[in-house]
Length: 260
Picture 1 (cartoon, rainbow, N blue to C red):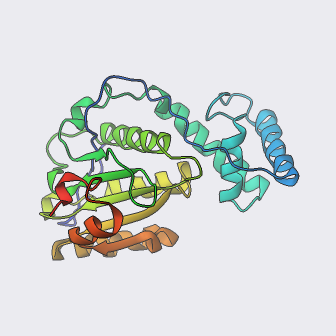
Picture 2: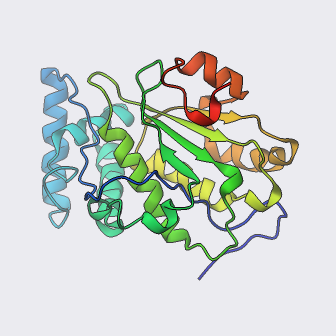
C-alpha cells in the first residue's frame, strides 16, 4: 500500500538510476580487507559463532553470517560490542536476503535507470572515493514509478560503488545535484529509506554528501530530513557546482554536468 504525505514538498519515491552498462549480476564484494589484531580476531569469531548458533538459517558465504570481513566491519561500527554487532548484522543479512541484493543487475533495474536521474561516475574523486551522482530535477515520483524499483536501483548503485573502492579506501561520495529542483521533485520518504540503508545496512560507508546549488524550495525538505540524519547530518555540505569542480575533481575527471 503506497504511503503519501500531504506536505506540498513531499511525495513517495526517489529513484537512483545508473548509466547503462553491459548486463551483469550484482555479486559485488562490499568490503576491503581490514587489518586484524589477535583481540579483534577473537571478537570476529565470537560474533561468527553467535550467528551460527542463534541464526543458523542465515545464508553463508560472501556477505553472509560467516563473512569475517563483513563481521569485522559491523564490529567497528558498533564499537566492538559483540551483542550490538550481532543484532545489527543480523538485520543487514536478512535484508540482503529478502531484498535479493545479490540478484540485482543492470538488466533488472534498466527501466528506472533509463530515466537518467542518477549514475555511478566513471572516475573517483580526488580523495579516491567512488562517486554517486543524483540529478534531482529529473525525478518525478508521482509519474507511475514503483518505490520498490527505486529502492532496488539504489541498492544496486551502492553495491556497485563499493565494489570499486580502491585498496585502503572505505567510503563513497554522494552528490545531489539540486539545480533546477522544484516541489514536484521532493521525496522525503525515499530520503528516509536512504538514511535507513546507510545507517543499518551500509554503516559508515558514506563519507560525504554534497547538496549542490540547493534552491530555496529545498529548505523545507532539509529541515524535515536533518533531524532524521542524526550524526550523518555532519556529513552534508551545501556547496556550488564550481566547488564540486574545483575541490573534488581534476579537469579530466569532473562529471560532464559540472564542467565550466
